[in-house]
Length: 130
Image (cartoon, rainbow, N blue to C red; front, side):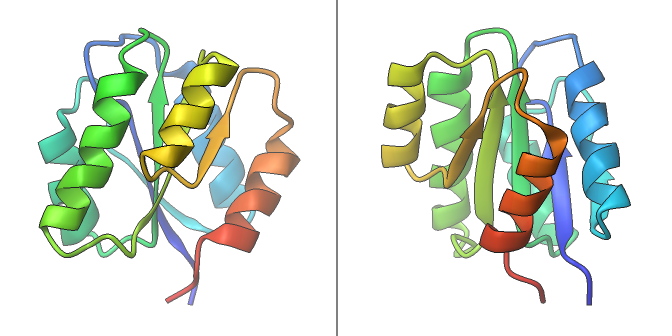
């Protein structure tokens, strides 16, 4: 059974080209991908993830709000008893922020220029199949 991955854009960020490229690459690698669209709240993302029974959530932010939005998703998943969902993120994220996000419960961080094959291989190795 293929992995189910939710790709989500939390916050007010209006650019989703990168998220769509990742979604397409993950789909082409054999995953089922749900793209939730722009301007999602952490609450909406968690609700969608639970309703869609996903194995992983890929978050994308370019606006700089990753330090509040990404950990909030992890926190809400834990509150809902869904902390088995692997959360990874991407966007313009400084190295020191990436380290803090990993400490906050994200499992992987990807920045612009990361080869798509590296991301799809990472998902295959870190997001369990159901």
